[in-house]
Image (cartoon, rainbow, N blue to C red; front, side, top):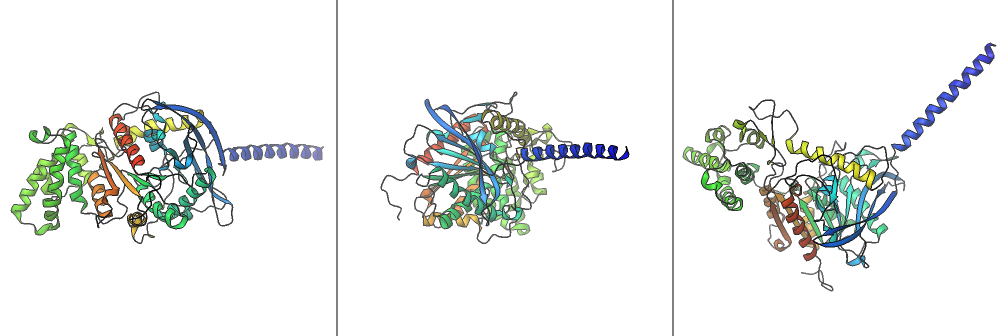
Length: 500
């Protein structure tokens, strides 16, 4: 009896364990991304009054290790115009967001694709969170690939993949160059004009990729687009000086400047402030504590005029007000602080004093609020990418070593331009971006070409919005038109030789 009972209990326990193992295995499979998969669908969009049919492929493509096995799966969304016969004449653009650690959803559903997040004209969330056709998409002039680097979006490490092989300035550049090479081969796009579009940190990424692709893969680009880009380790002027025009723009937007300046257009105000910053403010700051007292007082008065801050507040900060202090002080009497990557947005804090913040920047909260549910709905429901994986809007990629810098990625972009007479660069920036202010980006562009011999291939556009200028409807129209024009004019004429 005892033996039968033990045998019976053993069978029950065995089947329970088997059931648990099977359930865990199935659950684990759902959470493991396939290294190589794709789903294709078709759609159309009307851009500038013209119907554009397109094919959209959503899927993963492997990053292979030295043993030939996949070390990671990189998730991508590829929009290809479907009424074009000869793809060798059709531009293709690879689009990245920043971070490092940001997925591609911002540029994907905010800027250039045939689909766009439904938001207010000024970029605020609207419920229910929806996706609409984007009549300003660049799909009419270029195919677009939105890439989620490893540990962002649905992209993940696999098998023997190691974090240290993917996370870091040059690790990131190396594996993404390999991935792009493989993508061009798979899709038959080697002869197409090629572009990189990078936002924020991806200025560093695409600057480095321009050289890596050229030097290691023989892939010569037609264009690099840097949207609200970091400095790429170029030697720029003092940050305090370069912040001044940005402060003036933000103060003008919030109507905090003297009446005579408020009556002027923003561009007229900034042309005056930019000249003052370089010609007078910079030498004053470089004197440090040895500045003459009468000069110090005169500079403080001018800064108060251009920033909307009190002269005493500026003197208390030795003529160089940090961004955090400015964001907290400008509208303090009204009970608001300013956004970081878009200072048009206002937030409220636990207390109005000081220069610290207890919450998320208001623009970041607004954008996360709208973009996260939209990208999940679009990829899973409309494009039919079924997975239990979480879509990492911001992924775990740290530590991100910077110690492998030698001459910086800006130098690499410069060298790529010098070796490739057909390579052009477009910078796009927002006046109200306090995270990466526009004048710092402009100064970086100046330093990219100290010889002045390539300045006709460097282009700079600024918009009356912030870091993600495209969330504002008016600037979405302007920025996509600028991007469309850049792509069209940077393709050489048939038979034109790449020579100086």
